[in-house]
Length: 66
Image 1 (cartoon, rainbow, N blue to C red):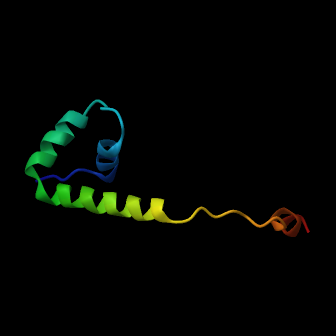
Image 2: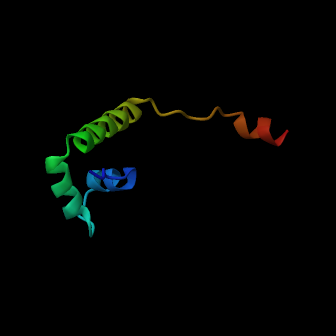
Image 3: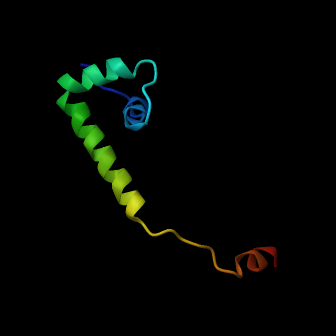
């Protein structure tokens, strides 16, 4: 069986249905491997979103310009 590409999995996470997404959704219904991969992708995205936002220090640009 051919599994979905990372691009196809990412498209399934998006807000709208793109052309070709319907066949990907049907594939997901029967492919445990791709469902697990999408679950792992969702977990990674959740961990990344949980990271604190970093702000550069005030003296960053002067230090770069020096």
